[in-house]
Image 1 (cartoon, rainbow, N blue to C red):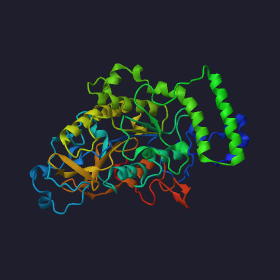
Image 2 (image 1 turned 120 degrees about the horizontal axis):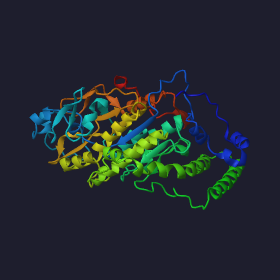
Image 3 (image 1 turned 90 degrees about the vertical axis):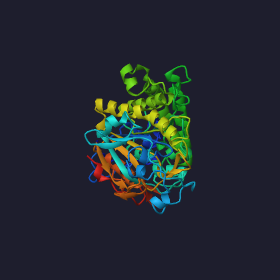
Image 4 (image 1 turned 180 degrees about the horizontal axis):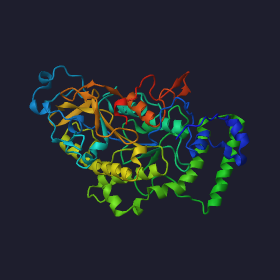
Length: 470
């Protein structure tokens, strides 16, 4: 996909040019119909497009890197010892409860031709090892959930900044006129920090995440209340004329114009969304691939989300985020009962994620779909109390797949304890820069003027992680 140079018209010009008041539909919606950028970077300097869509698998609460993808045999050797004596100086933790050095309860083995180390928590995902680019040296700026969630989602620890999905939607629009560019499939848990993790911040409101609930009715009013399509169109036409007159009288107002754009998109979604979220017509084989035949309800919930995500990608959604299902634990946030909590959470997502990767690959979509698996931080290599792990922002693991990423590779490293990143440290800004790069966007050029300066997702930071690029 190439970016075409587009000179935006003013809102007043747009109103004058369009008949029946429908010119009041915001520029964002117009461009989304053609998959164009709302603020297209200069095509002479943009990176090549590798990915058309992103599926962000958000692992709420912070999975433990030393129990999943970062094998540290030294923990077994020093298991049960005082970490301050074995490891030396320790950084302050969220709850300042320093237990003993804690070996992983799960065995690690090498998988795939690449020999990627993975724990037995992910037996299905292990079969996709050669598709994964595992980054073991990610760091965060906060050890607290809310601030770390904002940082992961928006590039800032402060509330109110645009989410990465909103930036992608703003920069590239949607590939479908029937869908918003940024969709959140809620498995049942809204992360700490709330809906501001999916907000548009200072970007126009049309770019905020659209939340889909689990089940057959993913959105309010998804079924029309009018008896005929003509009656509904008449209502929309009247609303557009009234709104256009208000804009003409009072001048431009983002909230109003975004609402107008959303009316039109919502009308088209009433036809598109029920069909997309109805997975009953998928074959039994496909449903089983995603774990929908599982006896474990959270697996079925997350499997349905992953299957809907694939269907959204097929229909042109640009950025799709999946949140975790409710497993009866406090997300991946195991300050106690680590074994039971991580096993149940892994059981919920392992088979669906592996099914998503295999299904996208079989349909020829993995090469154009970037998959990102990440929590807001990791866990300590020493225990909190007897059987938990505290928050660790100093070194944790994120993996990516598809969409221009090398498979079967690792990047960066933590120290021998799995505690701190010591090689090729990766900031969240670098992760965001890499995501945009693979979508064909130079992160330094995707800007929005606000507060007296040109703002961007990566602020004044960010380097592309070239070591994982295909």
